[in-house]
Amino acid sequence: MAGRPAGDDEREVLEVRLRGRDLEVETAPGVFSAGRLDLGTRVLLREAPTPPDGGHLLDLGCGWGPLALAMAAEAPGAVVWAVDVSERALDLVRRNADRLGLPGVRAVLPSEVPDDVVLAGLWSNPPIRVGKDALHALLLRWLPRLAPGADAHLVVQRNLGADSLQAWLGGALPAPLEATRAGSAKGYRVLRVRRPADGAAGTHATS
View 1: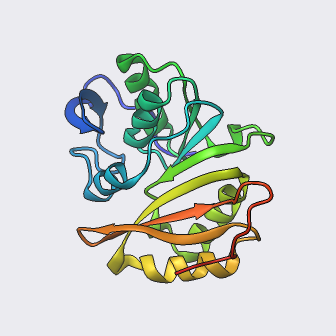
View 2: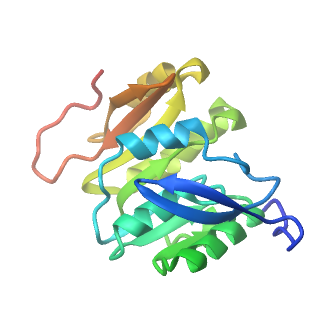
């Protein structure tokens, strides 16, 4: 666990646009991209399809919550798990969900997501700088929890190893999960990991 919740004198209001919605959210120093909506997250928000309005969705490495908040606004019938190791980040997500009237958001530590939760969708701007081994372990923990027919969308900067990560996913993910490139913009790749629907044919990895 890291990062105590921000005090009243540390939090500030940030105006952001999430999937066509102009919103005011709270941020604070010590969380990822506290002063603005970062470019990678903007690319993912532009490229990812509308999440399913039901089941369980996951924002992996949520920071102050832009992806979780966007998913919850578009899928009010879903439970959206906003996962981070920073209590400061999680406190901000809870505040932002309350501020925006999004009761489906659950901001929790990784260990607090029940083991029986199966994911209908996953969005992530993953913490690339934790190092390759830690990143791989993180992805292998969560991506296999996709339900049949469900997708994960990850945004990764090209010069920080997006293409090599896609290649690794293709070899490391258990079948029948498959990794493809869903989009590319402004120096970022959006990678898609899909578990085919039951009975659907699919390859383990594609380019």
